[in-house]
Length: 250
Image (cartoon, rainbow, N blue to C red):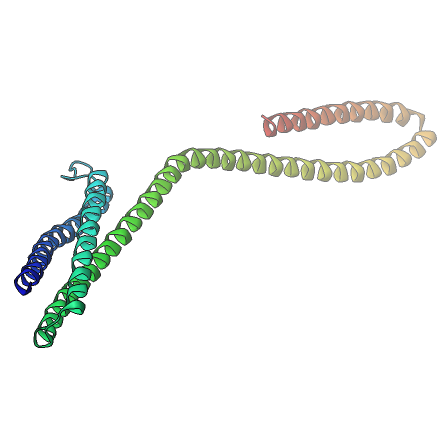
């Protein structure tokens, strides 16, 4: 009976050591995969900024599939090792030899510590991988947003440039209109002043004409010439004003 229970215990220890060896190899490969994913993400970021000639040996989707597969395999191995440890705990609790019970408990505790270390290492490596992948996805989204902004900014810049040119043209037109109006107002004031002077001179000439008939005919000829000159001056001013307006709104 003791030999049978001893063989059972040895079988459990062999299963535990075998699973621990498998877990050790799997965790090493799992850690290398996560490290290579992190490095390839950094290279991809640098390549996007400087060059587009090189391509990674293993793209992100393949690494994601390998990560998921290895994670499932490690979780299964951890579950199997946990089951073996539980069976070993049941055996130590049912062992009938007190002198051997302490040694069995020590062995069981060592296997439990190994299981705990492997579990902790697996979750830590997995968390690091998920953080790197999440950061890479975020950076990829940011790069896409920047590229879309750059592609759209060219059109926006051209539109802005056209709007600025149109705005400058309108400002120049407004300035020309203001200058034309200022010239017209100054001309109006000058003509009003000249009109007053001419009225004063005309009244004086009429007074003289009434006194001297010979001078009256001379004054009439002078008035006709002044009217003709006024009409010519007014026509020239009108034509200049129209040409300025046409140039301003062209």
